[in-house]
Length: 449
Image 1 (cartoon, rainbow, N blue to C red):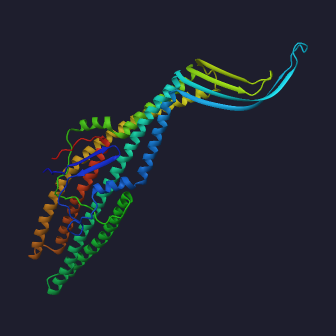
Image 2 (cartoon, one colour):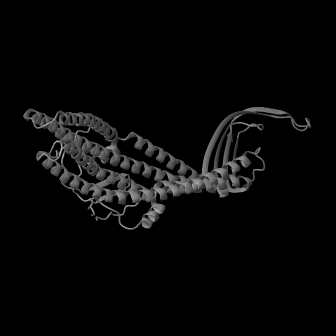
Image 3 (cartoon, rainbow, N blue to C red):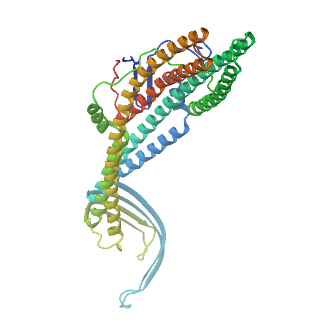
C-alpha cells in the first residue's frame, strides 16, 4: 500500500528563502484551527529576521568575501603621493680656498612625490589574486550554508514540536480511556461482576499513563521553547499538518541524486574551493624564489627658499622605467613557508575526499531512510487499523465475559502505541526530506506518488 505525500518545494533566491507547503485539513490541539497559529512559512521568515547565529555567520562570510577581494586587487596598479617639509643646512669647503670661498647656509625645502607602480610579471601576486577569487567563492557558499542550516533548523524544531504535541495528545487520550476503565472496573465490583484484580490492573495502567502524559508535556514544552529560540518570539499555537494529506516523494534513482549532490552539495563545494585556495597559496609561496618585474613612473618636485649661491631652487624630476627584483635570501622564511603551504594543500585535498565520502554516505542513508519511512507509515497505518479492530473485538468479548479486563488493557495499549508511531512518523519523514534536500543541493520539484 503506497501513501500519497504533499508537495513540498523550496527555493533560495538571493538572501531570501521561501518555502511553500501545500497541505489541507489543519487542526489545533484543542480543536478548530486558530488564525493565530504559527505556520512553517512564518517561522522561517521570523527566524531569518531574528536568529543571531545565522546573522553572525553571514557577517563573517561577507568579511571573508572582502578579504578575498582585497587579495584579488593586489595585482592592480598602485598610485601613491608623498610630501615632506624639512629644514636643511648646506656647507661648502673647497679644497682651494684661494679660488672659492667657503659658504654655509640654512634653508627650508618642500618636496612632493607622485609614484605609480604596476606589476608586469609577479607570479606571487598573481597566485594571491587567484587565492582571493577562491576565497570569495568560499564566502558566498558559507553564506548559503548558513541560510540552509537555519532553514533545516526551523523545519526540525517546527516538526519536532508538532510531533511532541501529537504524542501529548495521544497520551492524554490514552489516560482518559484508562481512567474510564478504572471507573468501569469499580462499577463492576459494585454490581458483583468484576474482581479487585481488574481494578488494580486498570489503576496501575492509569498511573503509568499519567506519568507518560507528564513526560510528554515536558517534551512538548521543551520543543516549543526550542522553536521560540529560533523564531525569536513566543509561540502559542502551531499550524498542523493534516495526517491524511499527501506528502512529496523523490523522482529519479539514487545515482541521479548522488550526481546532483556531487555538483551542488554546499559543504563539498566549500572544500573544493578551499583546496583551490590552498593550491594558489602554495604557488604564491613558491613564486617568492622567482624574479618580479614591474613598471614604474615617479614625479618629484622640490622647492627650497635659499641655497649656497644665495637664491632658492625649484627642481623637478620625472622617471619612467621597468624594475626587476629578485629576493636572494630571507633567512629561510620563504622555504619554511613553502613547505607549510604544501602541507596545507595536501590537507585541503584530503578534506575534499572526506567531504565526498560523507556526502555519498549521507545521500545513500537519507535515500534509504526516506523510502523505508514511507513503507513504515503504510505499515503503521495498517497496524492502527488492525489494533483498532482488535480493541473493538476484545471489548465486545469482555462484555460477553469471554475476555478479561487485562485483555482489553493490553489491546488498548497496543492500539495507542501504534497510533502514536503512525502519527509521528510523518513528521520524521518531513525532517528527513528537508535534510535530503540540503545534502543534494537541488531545487528540483519533488513528485507526488
